[in-house]
Image (cartoon, rainbow over all chains, first blue to last red; front, side, top):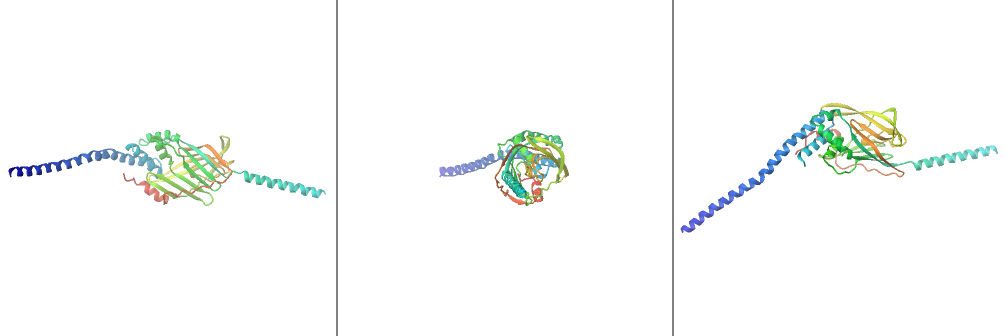
Length: 79
Length: 239
């Protein structure tokens, strides 16, 4: 009887431990990608807006300003 | 007797005249493909802007790899960039000179179309392209062709205000096509050199044909008005 109770407690304990590990692993997988996008794209978005405005201020038409801003954004992200 | 001889001479003259006219008509060039290279000069605005100067310098290097083709026949022209392998400098050059835009012109129907192909997608725009040219007395040789100068003004309206830039065209009356680079037309001869703001298109190859080659109308993309497109492009894309 004692053996059976011990086995049941051990089974439940190991199950919780296993589940806890699974959740933690998922978090580890997602974090670096999110961080990478945040660190690369946010400043490059600012580059896009800054370049667009400078082109407009210096007499570019809307299409030209958009194209130059996109080229600057692509250069920034390296995509 | 003398009257009969005169008549005969007149008949001969008329025949020769008709033969010459027919010869002239059949020997005329009816279509062609003109190749242009591009040069980006110093620009007071772009070259001095803290944000843009590095990008503009890259563009000035990259532009040396870009060429355009102008297909022409008696009624239409189509101006397109030639294919090439791209890099960062070339991408900036394409952006500054709007190289991905295709220009179609029909001088009989006054139908002018721009097909824009950029990061926002493909758009087709019908636009008005009548240029008020001033014919100057200046002339110069471009290759073996005697060319004459014509000038006009480019007006760019954006949210900052209105900007004016000079347009200088060198056209060649001995090549009787009224077309030129970037949708410009309306001069009494083919435009062999065109300067618009800081960008100069210069002819590098002229290939004329006796037969008429049809030119297709660009129709890939969503049809929008110029004002609608300006609205679309003025909003930053969703990243």
